[in-house]
Length: 253
Image 1 (cartoon, rainbow, N blue to C red):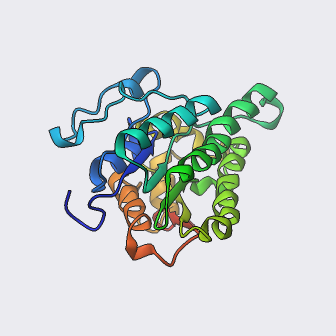
Image 2: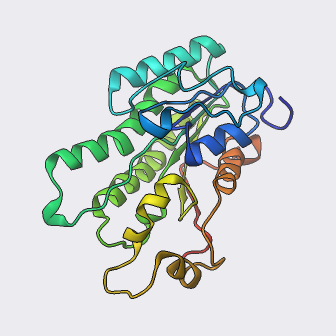
């Protein structure tokens, strides 16, 4: 691999589709791995060039809501790659629901994947990292803007930013940087299914009209644009940035 990340050993969770796939595809990372789930996420990313396919969704499957599978995922990746330099934690699920409709099972599932899964991914990955390690967690613009009815999802992502902030001094002692990224509306299959739910029920407009009028750039982001921010955060160019969340949201206001 060429570029500033040449020779780095990276684990990408949630890399079978959407933003995670863009991170694995466009970032010059050595030996990225993909987490497969069911349905569309289990489809092999054939758009990757041949030399980037040595890991596929079928090689390492893991459900990040299961602590044992997270440990297995990170250990297998580290064993195969000879250690880990980078963790790009992207696996997550969406959720909309009014307060009265949210069940304990909903709460546990969303936090198990979006929050606990990312925390445990860090816990396990750093066992294989040395000085110079880089970690990027995935939050959301929803952690910074009120969306109706999105409290459960948004709080699970806001917690991720607190994880990055509060682990930064601990991991900093080992020379490991940890940050988070908070993407805004991004063109993915997840956004295709959830877009209409981001519009407040009292607003007589479709989602794309809202984006045009409430975003400084007037459009949704592209997965490759979010991946570029991740690439920066895991590079040596970001060596003096840790514990921070980068809002890549197109200037949402």
